[in-house]
Image 1: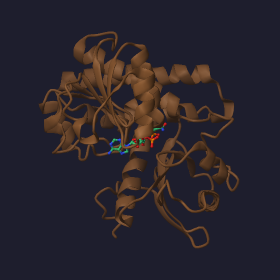
Image 2: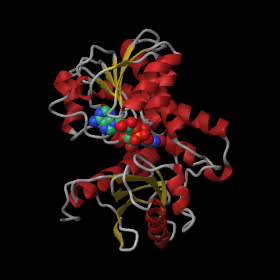
Image 3: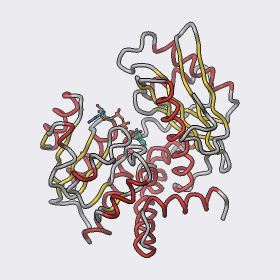
Length: 343
Ligand code: NAD
Protein backbone atom coordinates (compact mmCIF):
# COMPACT_ATOMS: atom_id res chain seq x y z
CA UNK A 1 0.00 0.00 0.00
CA UNK A 2 1.73 3.15 -1.21
CA UNK A 3 1.33 6.34 0.81
CA UNK A 4 3.50 9.02 -0.79
CA UNK A 5 2.37 7.89 -4.25
CA UNK A 6 -1.23 7.36 -3.22
CA UNK A 7 -3.75 9.02 -5.52
CA UNK A 8 -5.22 10.96 -2.56
CA UNK A 9 -1.86 11.99 -1.06
CA UNK A 10 -1.58 15.77 -1.23
CA UNK A 11 1.59 16.79 0.60
CA UNK A 12 0.12 15.59 3.91
CA UNK A 13 2.44 16.50 6.78
CA UNK A 14 2.01 13.30 8.78
CA UNK A 15 0.19 10.00 8.45
CA UNK A 16 0.17 7.78 11.53
CA UNK A 17 -0.84 4.10 11.50
CA UNK A 18 -2.00 3.06 14.96
CA UNK A 19 -2.37 -0.48 16.32
CA UNK A 20 -3.13 -1.58 19.87
CA UNK A 21 -3.11 -5.31 20.38
CA UNK A 22 -5.12 -5.41 23.62
CA UNK A 23 -8.10 -3.36 22.46
CA UNK A 24 -7.80 -4.45 18.82
CA UNK A 25 -7.60 -0.80 17.70
CA UNK A 26 -6.59 -0.24 14.11
CA UNK A 27 -6.65 3.42 13.17
CA UNK A 28 -5.04 5.94 10.86
CA UNK A 29 -4.54 9.59 11.79
CA UNK A 30 -3.73 11.98 8.93
CA UNK A 31 -2.52 15.53 9.49
CA UNK A 32 -2.83 17.35 6.21
CA UNK A 33 -1.71 20.89 6.95
CA UNK A 34 -1.01 22.90 10.11
CA UNK A 35 -0.18 26.23 8.46
CA UNK A 36 -3.13 28.01 10.10
CA UNK A 37 -2.94 26.14 13.43
CA UNK A 38 -3.16 22.64 14.93
CA UNK A 39 -5.08 20.14 12.85
CA UNK A 40 -8.73 19.64 13.84
CA UNK A 41 -11.00 16.97 12.40
CA UNK A 42 -13.39 14.21 13.32
CA UNK A 43 -12.69 10.59 14.12
CA UNK A 44 -14.68 8.28 11.84
CA UNK A 45 -15.38 4.65 12.69
CA UNK A 46 -16.25 2.54 9.68
CA UNK A 47 -16.16 -1.07 8.59
CA UNK A 48 -13.73 -0.44 5.72
CA UNK A 49 -13.31 -3.28 3.24
CA UNK A 50 -9.55 -2.77 3.11
CA UNK A 51 -6.76 -0.77 4.73
CA UNK A 52 -6.34 1.08 1.44
CA UNK A 53 -9.98 2.17 1.49
CA UNK A 54 -9.43 3.55 5.01
CA UNK A 55 -6.21 5.30 3.95
CA UNK A 56 -7.92 6.86 0.94
CA UNK A 57 -10.75 8.11 3.16
CA UNK A 58 -8.48 9.64 5.80
CA UNK A 59 -6.22 11.31 3.22
CA UNK A 60 -9.19 12.89 1.43
CA UNK A 61 -11.07 13.83 4.58
CA UNK A 62 -8.04 15.46 6.24
CA UNK A 63 -7.35 17.58 3.16
CA UNK A 64 -11.01 18.59 3.16
CA UNK A 65 -10.62 19.74 6.78
CA UNK A 66 -7.71 22.03 5.87
CA UNK A 67 -9.82 23.70 3.19
CA UNK A 68 -12.95 23.72 5.37
CA UNK A 69 -11.23 25.36 8.35
CA UNK A 70 -9.58 27.95 6.10
CA UNK A 71 -12.84 28.89 4.34
CA UNK A 72 -14.63 29.08 7.69
CA UNK A 73 -12.09 31.67 8.86
CA UNK A 74 -10.70 29.45 11.64
CA UNK A 75 -7.13 29.47 12.91
CA UNK A 76 -7.02 25.71 12.60
CA UNK A 77 -5.31 23.25 10.28
CA UNK A 78 -6.76 20.09 8.78
CA UNK A 79 -6.61 16.52 10.04
CA UNK A 80 -8.82 13.48 10.38
CA UNK A 81 -8.71 10.00 11.85
CA UNK A 82 -10.38 6.73 10.96
CA UNK A 83 -10.88 3.68 13.14
CA UNK A 84 -11.19 0.49 11.12
CA UNK A 85 -14.07 -1.31 12.87
CA UNK A 86 -17.79 -1.90 12.58
CA UNK A 87 -19.39 0.96 14.56
CA UNK A 88 -22.44 -1.19 15.39
CA UNK A 89 -20.43 -4.17 16.65
CA UNK A 90 -17.25 -2.84 18.26
CA UNK A 91 -16.45 -5.27 21.10
CA UNK A 92 -15.03 -3.05 23.86
CA UNK A 93 -15.70 0.55 22.86
CA UNK A 94 -14.16 2.02 25.99
CA UNK A 95 -10.86 0.17 25.50
CA UNK A 96 -10.87 1.12 21.82
CA UNK A 97 -11.32 4.85 22.42
CA UNK A 98 -8.89 4.91 25.33
CA UNK A 99 -6.25 3.37 23.08
CA UNK A 100 -7.15 5.86 20.36
CA UNK A 101 -6.82 8.71 22.88
CA UNK A 102 -3.29 7.57 23.76
CA UNK A 103 -2.26 7.73 20.09
CA UNK A 104 -3.80 11.21 19.73
CA UNK A 105 -1.89 12.25 22.86
CA UNK A 106 1.38 11.00 21.40
CA UNK A 107 1.05 13.66 18.69
CA UNK A 108 1.45 16.36 21.33
CA UNK A 109 -1.38 18.63 20.16
CA UNK A 110 -0.70 18.58 16.43
CA UNK A 111 -4.11 16.88 16.00
CA UNK A 112 -7.40 17.36 17.92
CA UNK A 113 -10.08 14.69 17.49
CA UNK A 114 -13.86 15.19 17.48
CA UNK A 115 -16.85 12.99 16.66
CA UNK A 116 -17.75 11.97 13.11
CA UNK A 117 -19.67 9.22 11.34
CA UNK A 118 -19.78 6.11 13.53
CA UNK A 119 -18.55 7.90 16.67
CA UNK A 120 -20.30 10.00 19.30
CA UNK A 121 -19.32 12.83 21.66
CA UNK A 122 -19.38 10.15 24.41
CA UNK A 123 -16.70 8.14 22.52
CA UNK A 124 -14.56 11.25 22.23
CA UNK A 125 -15.02 11.90 25.96
CA UNK A 126 -13.61 8.41 26.60
CA UNK A 127 -10.60 9.26 24.39
CA UNK A 128 -10.40 12.46 26.43
CA UNK A 129 -9.57 10.46 29.56
CA UNK A 130 -6.20 9.79 27.89
CA UNK A 131 -5.56 13.11 26.17
CA UNK A 132 -6.61 16.74 26.30
CA UNK A 133 -6.37 16.98 22.51
CA UNK A 134 -10.05 16.32 21.89
CA UNK A 135 -12.92 18.66 21.02
CA UNK A 136 -16.71 18.70 20.76
CA UNK A 137 -17.08 17.25 24.25
CA UNK A 138 -20.35 16.89 26.13
CA UNK A 139 -20.62 19.80 28.56
CA UNK A 140 -18.42 21.99 26.35
CA UNK A 141 -19.31 22.76 22.72
CA UNK A 142 -21.09 19.38 22.61
CA UNK A 143 -22.61 17.68 19.59
CA UNK A 144 -21.60 19.63 16.45
CA UNK A 145 -24.42 18.14 14.36
CA UNK A 146 -27.11 20.80 15.00
CA UNK A 147 -24.63 23.51 13.93
CA UNK A 148 -23.61 21.56 10.85
CA UNK A 149 -27.32 21.28 10.05
CA UNK A 150 -27.87 25.01 10.57
CA UNK A 151 -24.95 25.87 8.25
CA UNK A 152 -26.21 23.40 5.66
CA UNK A 153 -29.71 24.84 5.86
CA UNK A 154 -28.37 28.38 5.34
CA UNK A 155 -26.15 27.08 2.53
CA UNK A 156 -29.20 25.57 0.82
CA UNK A 157 -30.93 28.94 1.17
CA UNK A 158 -27.91 30.70 -0.41
CA UNK A 159 -28.04 28.24 -3.32
CA UNK A 160 -31.81 28.67 -3.67
CA UNK A 161 -31.38 32.45 -3.74
CA UNK A 162 -28.60 32.27 -6.34
CA UNK A 163 -30.12 29.66 -8.62
CA UNK A 164 -33.86 30.21 -8.21
CA UNK A 165 -33.99 33.81 -6.98
CA UNK A 166 -36.03 32.78 -3.93
CA UNK A 167 -35.63 33.95 -0.33
CA UNK A 168 -37.22 30.87 1.18
CA UNK A 169 -37.40 27.12 0.67
CA UNK A 170 -41.16 27.21 1.25
CA UNK A 171 -42.92 24.92 -1.20
CA UNK A 172 -39.67 23.55 -2.65
CA UNK A 173 -39.14 19.80 -2.92
CA UNK A 174 -35.92 18.72 -1.24
CA UNK A 175 -34.43 15.22 -1.30
CA UNK A 176 -32.35 14.40 1.77
CA UNK A 177 -30.10 11.35 1.56
CA UNK A 178 -29.25 10.20 5.09
CA UNK A 179 -31.28 11.35 8.07
CA UNK A 180 -28.76 10.63 10.82
CA UNK A 181 -27.31 13.20 13.24
CA UNK A 182 -27.12 16.11 10.78
CA UNK A 183 -29.81 15.00 8.33
CA UNK A 184 -32.43 14.91 11.07
CA UNK A 185 -31.79 18.51 12.23
CA UNK A 186 -31.58 19.67 8.61
CA UNK A 187 -34.99 18.15 7.90
CA UNK A 188 -36.35 20.03 10.90
CA UNK A 189 -35.10 23.41 9.60
CA UNK A 190 -36.40 22.69 6.10
CA UNK A 191 -39.77 21.52 7.38
CA UNK A 192 -40.13 24.57 9.63
CA UNK A 193 -39.68 26.80 6.57
CA UNK A 194 -42.24 24.86 4.59
CA UNK A 195 -40.19 22.60 2.30
CA UNK A 196 -41.55 19.24 1.15
CA UNK A 197 -39.16 16.47 2.13
CA UNK A 198 -38.29 13.28 0.28
CA UNK A 199 -35.90 11.19 2.35
CA UNK A 200 -33.94 7.98 2.30
CA UNK A 201 -31.74 6.09 4.73
CA UNK A 202 -30.66 2.54 5.42
CA UNK A 203 -31.98 2.71 9.02
CA UNK A 204 -35.74 2.34 9.20
CA UNK A 205 -35.97 3.92 12.66
CA UNK A 206 -34.38 7.17 11.48
CA UNK A 207 -36.76 7.27 8.51
CA UNK A 208 -39.84 6.67 10.64
CA UNK A 209 -38.87 9.58 12.88
CA UNK A 210 -38.62 12.15 10.05
CA UNK A 211 -41.75 10.79 8.38
CA UNK A 212 -43.73 11.14 11.60
CA UNK A 213 -42.29 14.48 12.74
CA UNK A 214 -41.93 16.29 9.42
CA UNK A 215 -44.29 14.47 7.06
CA UNK A 216 -41.36 13.35 4.91
CA UNK A 217 -41.97 10.97 2.02
CA UNK A 218 -39.71 7.92 2.16
CA UNK A 219 -38.03 6.43 -0.92
CA UNK A 220 -35.58 3.54 -1.36
CA UNK A 221 -31.84 4.46 -1.23
CA UNK A 222 -31.26 3.96 -4.96
CA UNK A 223 -34.32 6.06 -5.86
CA UNK A 224 -33.19 9.26 -4.17
CA UNK A 225 -31.19 10.55 -7.16
CA UNK A 226 -33.97 10.54 -9.74
CA UNK A 227 -36.60 12.33 -7.66
CA UNK A 228 -38.29 15.35 -9.25
CA UNK A 229 -36.95 17.82 -6.69
CA UNK A 230 -35.44 21.30 -6.58
CA UNK A 231 -32.58 20.37 -4.25
CA UNK A 232 -30.69 17.14 -3.62
CA UNK A 233 -29.03 17.20 -0.20
CA UNK A 234 -26.44 14.43 0.26
CA UNK A 235 -26.16 13.88 4.03
CA UNK A 236 -24.87 10.31 4.24
CA UNK A 237 -21.47 9.21 3.00
CA UNK A 238 -19.15 10.54 0.28
CA UNK A 239 -18.76 9.98 -3.48
CA UNK A 240 -22.49 9.92 -4.18
CA UNK A 241 -21.97 12.30 -7.11
CA UNK A 242 -20.50 10.06 -9.77
CA UNK A 243 -20.90 8.79 -13.34
CA UNK A 244 -23.95 6.73 -12.39
CA UNK A 245 -25.85 9.23 -10.27
CA UNK A 246 -25.27 12.59 -12.00
CA UNK A 247 -27.21 11.65 -15.17
CA UNK A 248 -30.18 10.68 -12.95
CA UNK A 249 -30.41 13.98 -11.09
CA UNK A 250 -33.44 16.16 -11.71
CA UNK A 251 -32.49 18.66 -8.99
CA UNK A 252 -31.26 22.13 -9.96
CA UNK A 253 -29.13 22.35 -6.83
CA UNK A 254 -26.89 19.91 -4.96
CA UNK A 255 -26.31 21.12 -1.42
CA UNK A 256 -25.84 18.83 1.56
CA UNK A 257 -23.59 18.14 4.52
CA UNK A 258 -21.76 14.96 3.47
CA UNK A 259 -17.99 15.17 3.11
CA UNK A 260 -16.31 14.42 -0.23
CA UNK A 261 -19.51 14.35 -2.24
CA UNK A 262 -17.80 14.38 -5.64
CA UNK A 263 -16.33 10.97 -6.50
CA UNK A 264 -13.70 12.86 -8.54
CA UNK A 265 -13.14 16.55 -9.38
CA UNK A 266 -14.45 15.86 -12.93
CA UNK A 267 -17.89 15.33 -11.41
CA UNK A 268 -17.97 18.99 -10.41
CA UNK A 269 -17.53 19.81 -14.10
CA UNK A 270 -20.30 17.36 -15.05
CA UNK A 271 -22.71 19.05 -12.64
CA UNK A 272 -21.83 22.44 -14.11
CA UNK A 273 -22.42 21.13 -17.66
CA UNK A 274 -25.84 19.93 -16.59
CA UNK A 275 -26.61 23.38 -15.15
CA UNK A 276 -26.79 22.05 -11.60
CA UNK A 277 -25.48 24.41 -8.92
CA UNK A 278 -23.15 22.57 -6.54
CA UNK A 279 -22.44 23.93 -3.04
CA UNK A 280 -18.86 22.77 -2.28
CA UNK A 281 -19.16 20.30 0.59
CA UNK A 282 -16.46 21.66 2.84
CA UNK A 283 -17.88 25.17 2.66
CA UNK A 284 -21.51 24.28 3.37
CA UNK A 285 -20.80 21.72 6.11
CA UNK A 286 -18.44 23.82 8.26
CA UNK A 287 -21.04 24.65 10.94
CA UNK A 288 -19.98 21.84 13.27
CA UNK A 289 -16.28 22.68 13.23
CA UNK A 290 -17.10 26.37 13.67
CA UNK A 291 -19.02 25.43 16.82
CA UNK A 292 -16.13 23.25 17.99
CA UNK A 293 -13.77 26.22 17.55
CA UNK A 294 -15.59 27.91 20.46
CA UNK A 295 -14.87 24.91 22.71
CA UNK A 296 -12.79 26.64 25.39
CA UNK A 297 -14.88 29.83 25.65
CA UNK A 298 -18.22 28.44 24.60
CA UNK A 299 -20.89 30.90 23.49
CA UNK A 300 -23.74 29.49 21.43
CA UNK A 301 -24.84 32.94 20.18
CA UNK A 302 -21.38 33.81 18.85
CA UNK A 303 -21.15 30.35 17.33
CA UNK A 304 -24.50 30.81 15.57
CA UNK A 305 -23.40 34.19 14.18
CA UNK A 306 -20.22 32.68 12.75
CA UNK A 307 -22.06 29.66 11.34
CA UNK A 308 -24.46 32.07 9.61
CA UNK A 309 -21.54 33.49 7.60
CA UNK A 310 -21.63 30.29 5.54
CA UNK A 311 -24.53 31.88 3.62
CA UNK A 312 -22.32 34.79 2.49
CA UNK A 313 -19.21 32.69 1.83
CA UNK A 314 -21.19 30.38 -0.43
CA UNK A 315 -22.93 33.28 -2.19
CA UNK A 316 -19.49 34.70 -2.98
CA UNK A 317 -18.28 31.33 -4.33
CA UNK A 318 -21.39 31.08 -6.56
CA UNK A 319 -20.97 34.63 -7.89
CA UNK A 320 -17.26 34.24 -8.72
CA UNK A 321 -17.91 30.85 -10.36
CA UNK A 322 -20.61 32.39 -12.57
CA UNK A 323 -18.54 35.45 -13.42
CA UNK A 324 -15.50 33.35 -14.38
CA UNK A 325 -17.45 30.44 -15.89
CA UNK A 326 -15.74 27.98 -13.56
CA UNK A 327 -16.95 25.23 -11.28
CA UNK A 328 -17.86 26.21 -7.73
CA UNK A 329 -15.40 23.60 -6.46
CA UNK A 330 -12.49 25.18 -8.36
CA UNK A 331 -13.36 28.62 -7.06
CA UNK A 332 -13.70 27.44 -3.45
CA UNK A 333 -10.37 25.54 -3.66
CA UNK A 334 -8.61 28.63 -4.98
CA UNK A 335 -10.10 30.82 -2.26
CA UNK A 336 -9.12 28.30 0.43
CA UNK A 337 -5.54 27.96 -0.88
CA UNK A 338 -5.16 31.75 -0.89
CA UNK A 339 -6.17 31.82 2.79
CA UNK A 340 -3.88 28.91 3.72
CA UNK A 341 -0.95 30.54 1.93
CA UNK A 342 -1.71 33.90 3.54
CA UNK A 343 -2.49 35.73 0.31
P1 NAD B 1 -24.65 9.83 10.73
O1 NAD B 1 -23.92 8.54 10.70
O2 NAD B 1 -25.36 10.20 11.98
O3 NAD B 1 -25.73 9.89 9.56
C1 NAD B 1 -25.51 9.35 8.31
C2 NAD B 1 -26.80 8.66 7.90
O4 NAD B 1 -26.64 8.20 6.57
C3 NAD B 1 -27.14 7.46 8.77
O5 NAD B 1 -28.47 7.57 9.24
C4 NAD B 1 -26.97 6.28 7.82
O6 NAD B 1 -27.85 5.22 8.09
C5 NAD B 1 -27.26 6.92 6.48
N1 NAD B 1 -26.70 6.21 5.34
C6 NAD B 1 -25.52 5.54 5.24
N2 NAD B 1 -25.39 5.00 4.02
C7 NAD B 1 -26.51 5.33 3.33
C8 NAD B 1 -26.98 5.06 2.03
N3 NAD B 1 -26.26 4.33 1.16
N4 NAD B 1 -28.15 5.57 1.64
C9 NAD B 1 -28.90 6.30 2.51
N5 NAD B 1 -28.53 6.58 3.76
C10 NAD B 1 -27.35 6.09 4.17
O7 NAD B 1 -23.60 10.95 10.30
P2 NAD B 1 -23.74 12.53 10.43
O8 NAD B 1 -22.95 12.97 11.60
O9 NAD B 1 -25.15 12.93 10.29
O10 NAD B 1 -22.92 12.99 9.15
C11 NAD B 1 -23.48 12.87 7.85
C12 NAD B 1 -22.47 13.35 6.82
O11 NAD B 1 -22.12 14.70 7.10
C13 NAD B 1 -21.14 12.59 6.81
O12 NAD B 1 -20.63 12.55 5.50
C14 NAD B 1 -20.24 13.44 7.68
O13 NAD B 1 -18.87 13.25 7.37
C15 NAD B 1 -20.71 14.81 7.28
N6 NAD B 1 -20.46 15.82 8.29
C16 NAD B 1 -20.98 15.69 9.53
C17 NAD B 1 -20.73 16.66 10.47
C18 NAD B 1 -21.30 16.58 11.86
O14 NAD B 1 -21.35 17.62 12.56
N7 NAD B 1 -21.81 15.46 12.30
C19 NAD B 1 -19.94 17.78 10.15
C20 NAD B 1 -19.46 17.89 8.84
C21 NAD B 1 -19.72 16.90 7.92
